[in-house]
Image (cartoon, rainbow, N blue to C red):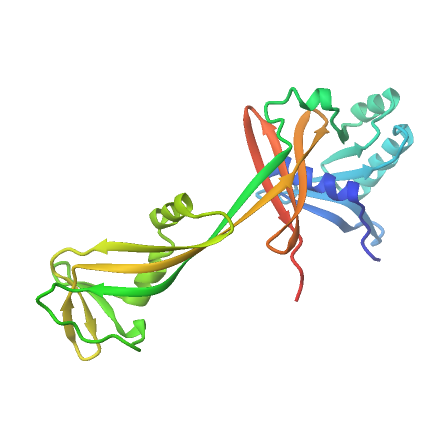
Length: 292
C-alpha cells in the first residue's frame, strides 16, 4: 500500500515534532496493523514517547473548506481503539462545529485548528519576524601545521612527513600523543569553534593562524627517537560560513504560536519551524535528504 501525504499533513507533522521535541518521535504516513484482524491501516501521524514506547498518539489531519463534524470524531474514536492508541488529536484547517468539539471532549479526543494567523493577530506576537537568518559554520579544516622551536635549535625538515609519525611529548608529565590525534581534538575544541564563529564572515572562506604556546619540556618526537623542543604550535585553519534568509509565515496551532518557513539549505529542501514560548523561540530545522 503506497503511503499518502499532502502539504497540510506535512505541516502538521512538522508542528507536532516541534511541540513534542525532544521527548517524542514523530512519524508521518505510518502503516499500523490491527492486531485483531491482521490488516494494515495507514495513519497520518504517529507520536511515540521515546522512554515509554507503549505511550502512542494518533494524529489525523483534514484540509477541508468546511468545518469538521461529529462523523469524523466517531471514525477517529473507532480507529484509535482498534489500533491501541492512548491519545487522539484531530487537526483541521477549517476548525470544528461546536457539536463535534463537545463530542470529541466527551471521548477524550483533542481538537486542534491549524491555520494561518491573521496579520492583526501575529503583529501582537513577541516574535513578529518576517524573516529568519541561519548561519552554518563549517570546519575548522587544518591546512598547515608549523612546529616552532627555540631559535638556538635547528629543527629537522618535516617536509613530506605524515603527521601520524610525529608525537607530541611532555617530558615533565611523561605524556605523549600523536600529532594526528591532537589535531582531531583541536578541531572539536569548543574554544576553537566559538573563536571561529565569532570571526567568520558570511558566504566566505575565512583563514586563521591559531597559535598555542608550549610549556617547558614540551616537544615532538620523530621516528628514530629524535626529541625537538617546542615554543609553540601554529595551526593554519580554514572555515566556511553559509548564510540563509528564510521568509516566515505565522501559524496558529490551537493556542500555540508557530512560525514556519521554507528554503533550500545546503542543497536540500528544508523547513524551519519556530515556536514562540514564554518569551523564547524554540527552533527546529527539517531537511529532505536526497538519496544517492
